[in-house]
Length: 159
Image 1: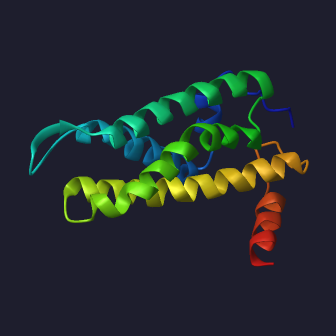
Image 2: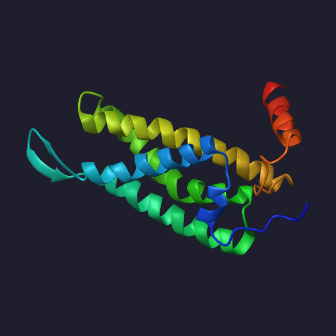
Image 3: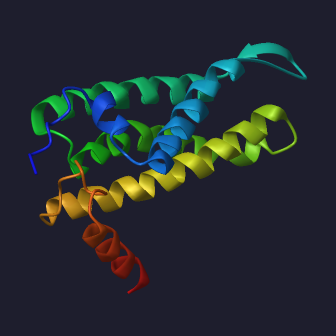
């Protein structure tokens, strides 16, 4: 059995992942890019530009740039999660502190709360990935290819 070629780009590496993981990446992309729909909003004082969706979009593109650079430097490793921690976490915390003022009544409020849930899950996974990388378990490429890895992962989760 021959050795698998390392994908040239991060997008190609993600395309080698199982469907459920590609779907998760798609959810992250959609929830972040949906911010564009909420940049301009209306409240009781009239139309205004909202800072939160701009922050979400900027942090999304900054994280993408960092991840692509890191992929070129380090390959497909768990350290890539640090891009989200660097770019998303400050915006996430800022928005989380403002959520009570945004509420849940409006579509914008529902979007912000959905963003906080989805991005929060991703940030937890990213933190775990970075810790695992620093502990010596860093390679992501082809990790789902063996049943042994799936069994190891399941045993870690259950323990």
